[in-house]
Length: 314
Image (cartoon, rainbow, N blue to C red; front, side, top):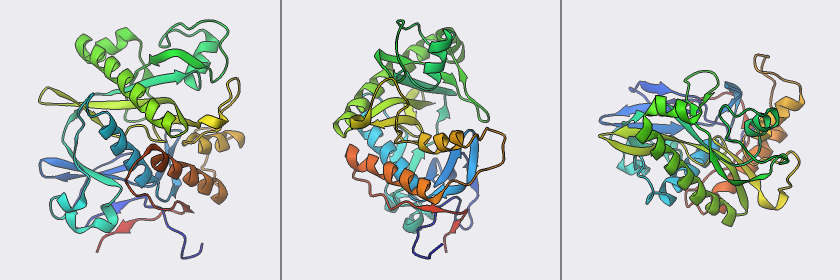
């Protein structure tokens, strides 16, 4: 690989500091009373972190999350304290090269273990459930709908968030049992309102936010929007001028990588299959379109494929 090709950031190391947590994509550090969240370029597919990464992906996810938080701040507060490295406490403010554009300082909150999924189109799991007549978690829909059809109105289909393995779809009673009746109603109302707002933002940029998921946390009785929002890792996103109901859609999200694996006959549990450089380059190009088109002022870098790397600050 030539030296001028940007390498993906798959792990962060800050001298003298221990990780608070390493998630699927994010590295988390304790920063006094707050938390520093760093979004890496790790690729997470089918419940596994891939050996390859996607350079610049962390910046795209950060940009879209911060954009969403800002766009819906009148609907619900979020847990971000600042995304300006110069405002981070020491020693984090000494590492702008590592942290700028891919991190934010947040409050420490108690996460609600619910994936608040909102679907505006019949696709993926919802299409499978619809065809099977499975109403254990998907509300009944009219007969005769086709693949990728726009739903008459968005539906809220929450899931229990598991640290490992697949999330568990919840019906309304299951959500109430997990979160309580009042909180369950609030999660549903806010999720649908945020989706409606961001669907308009993406539509103005020429994209369809087909479905997405939100996460919330609690602190001192406040409900806060947390983690990531409206990113190609947490959403299905299609180009509006390419949308055709009744067929498989051309994805502008991580499904472009998942579709490749499916086309190779790969199944979860199989050994890793290398993702071709050209595919990673195309995924990166599509990801980079999203923040710019949606109006984010957060700069994002180029995106090319690479092997496992770490970046250590000096």
